[in-house]
Image 1 (cartoon, rainbow, N blue to C red):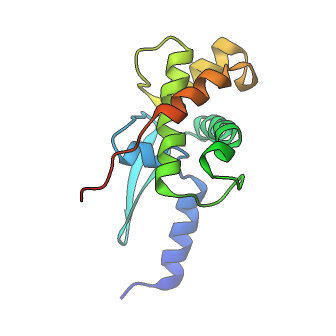
Image 2 (cartoon, rainbow, N blue to C red):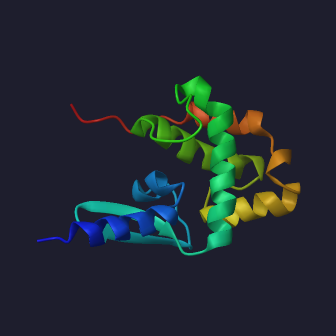
Length: 145
């Protein structure tokens, strides 16, 4: 028997440290040195072990979601979105960022976002049009029929 209050408390703690690129990480489409997988009941998730990296990644993902979301049908600035849209935003956003920085692949998510901030002087200076092209170009894996 699971103590429901303890379960909810632990889940709330994990939600505060959830990685904004968790779906990409869980789907093996990206990697991150700061990511830690967790298993709670029947749930699998990814939490960030570095508060600064999580803040940087959350800010970058919010920028990508704000710019690309309406084009993909994710009009709400926060909250749940369909899995396919989340994958396009996360994986496409990382691939687009890597391309914008001249990297061959995304590599370490936290390092990539930190490099973007240091090279470009902040997230505002990123070429979001080219990043959005990568978001639009990414096709999530189709279900088997």
